[in-house]
Image 1: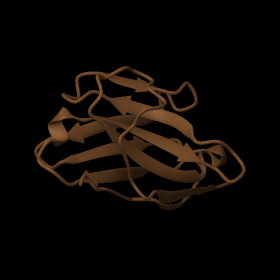
Image 2: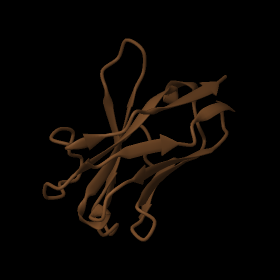
Image 3: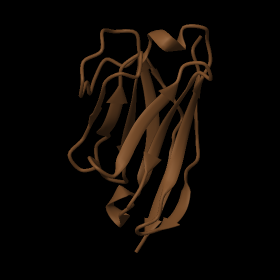
Image 4: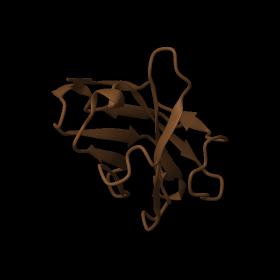
Length: 124
C-alpha cells in the first residue's frame, strides 16, 4: 500500500514563505504523477499544482502561478512545494496526491492515493 505523508505546514505572515514536503512510501515513486491540492473551510478542494513522473513538466493553478513551485526528488521519494509571497487566501489544508495514470497537466480527478494533509495558515 502506498502512503503519502505531508509536512512543512504552519503559521506564517503574509508575504512569507513555506516549503511543503510529501514523502511517499513504495518503490515506484518515479512512476507516479504527483499533485498538490488544498481545501479551505466551506470550500471545495482546489487543484494547486502538479508534476510529471520525471519532473520535466509542471502545471499550476492561476491563483498560485509565479508564487509556488512544485518539484520532486525521485531518489528521496519526495515531492515538494515551495510557496512564496503567501497571502491570507492561501490559508488551507494542503494535500498531496499520486496517480499512476498517464500524466495530464491540470488533472483534477482520478488520483489513486492521498495524504492526510498539512495545515497552512497565513496571517494578514
